[in-house]
Amino acid sequence: MASVSFHNVKKIYSFGSVEEKRRLKQAGGDGAKRSNLQITDEGVVAVQSFNLDIADKEFIVLVGPSGCGKSTTLRMVAGLEEISDGELYIDGKLMNYVDSKERDISMVFQNYALFPHMTVYENMAFPLTLRHERRDVIDQKVREAAQILDITDYLDRKPRALSGGQRQRVAIGRAIVRAPKVMLMDEPLSNLDAKLRNEMRAEIIKLRKRINTTFIYVTHDQTEAMTLGDRIVIMKDGYIQQIGTPQEVFNHPANLFVASFIGTPVMNFFDAMLIREGESYSVELDGWRVPLSEAKRRRLLEKDVQGGPVTLGVRPEHMLLWQEGGIEARVDVREMMGSSVHLHVTAAGREAIIVVQLYDAEDSYDSGDTVRFRFAGSSAHVFDRESGRNLEG
Image (cartoon, rainbow, N blue to C red):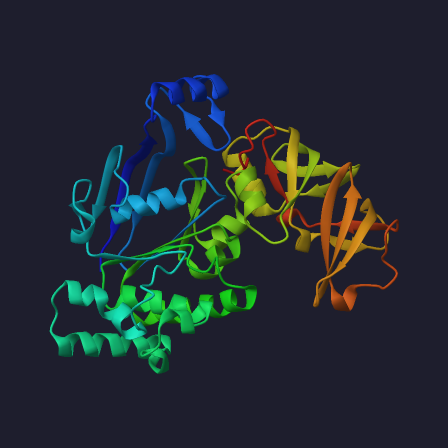
């Protein structure tokens, strides 16, 4: 078991040739971004100024869109990628120049990476065989891991005879038999269907409680991040956008990107006005004024935020249908989601979604209908229109 610390870690992929450098610089310009990639004279920057302290036995999830640098960060911990700058520590020891096999880590890959000619037992025993463990020790550890993962009945089978979920259990079993200090998981559930993903998420939560190790988990799925992580690290374009518990990043997103990435359905955004009257704050949207809650008022006062145009964010589940007053919206699409109905509407010049619980949903809501909604001041998030940062800090 071990802590992991990143100190200003950076990863730069050098240009393959002078021609490649010229082509990329012409496409993006000096220091500019092309797609997700920041291009500098040194090369293409995949991870920039990464700082993070992971406590012993903590479950950390790196989440973000494709190309944000999360898998590259994981591979630097594994020793599969060199660190261009900065320092990586595992259990207080500098790891920049330590071989992967000496780091006492295990990694579970997206594509399982099982040996097709070996049985499940042989696949799980393989890392222990490489360490020249005694046969009785290997047998004990393999069978203990198989019991934890409920794959004892499959030990004599080859991977081709297993389902996707069973193969992923074998891959996890092969990783945990080594009792590593740090367990790395690179999108391990992305190849599974929705039902299996839900089942395997539950299995990983159970596994985490049974083995005492530090987890670093990479995913692009914010649902996985919210359900698995003690803390979430949200990344974009190689930069950390926010670090916090699932509840913190959901309730207090640091900027527009985090607000739009975390939550299903995504947060609704409107052009609104923040109004300050002495020490009180309210937001005005489409002529409807909503006083902000005491907690939000206090945080805005601490930052001495002045009134003016803002981007207002309200989560779909916090928008409440109202009979009279409130903000008018036109229903574009009515989407049945089982226990709730998602009304896709146009309101205040923006497209938005209102989540209505099924017991509140009327069959008359249909395309072209007009509805009205309100939201509480505690549910309003105000963002700077230029920078996108949360004005509450």
